[in-house]
Image (tube, rainbow, N blue to C red; front, side, top):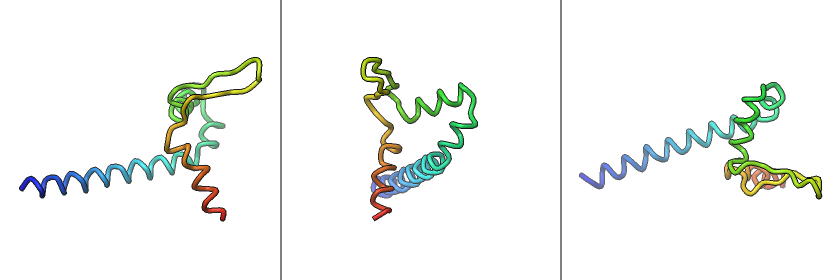
Length: 85
């Protein structure tokens, strides 16, 4: 009985994960449009989602920097490059 429950939980978790990935991909495909048309609170939400550790600005180098990019979004350039081949 425990094996059946574990199997069911694995299937449910996989479905939940796939739904989350689908939602993230749909959202990321409209990210520029959402950012451009969004107000400040919406832009803050997007920024926090993409850069969960926040972003900083190095005044001396004139560059924006971050310690971490959300793994869903950091994979997009890699996938795009692979698809372009």
